Length: 62
Image 1: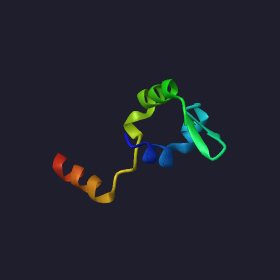
Image 2: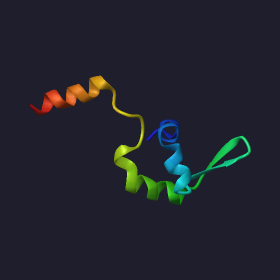
Image 3: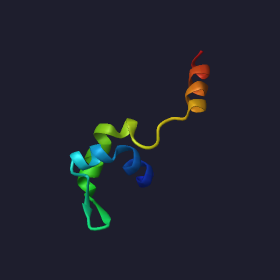
């Protein structure tokens, strides 16, 4: 998982679960909470699928 994509696309959820918190200009990451969050939400973590990737998956299933 790329942390940049994880934070960019899931920032609100990560803050809500105590995974990340703002400290001045930096973001602090709580490692135990991060692993717990990934266990619960890991299937949807990272960047969203592109349209081409979604179409390729649909075509491969048929």
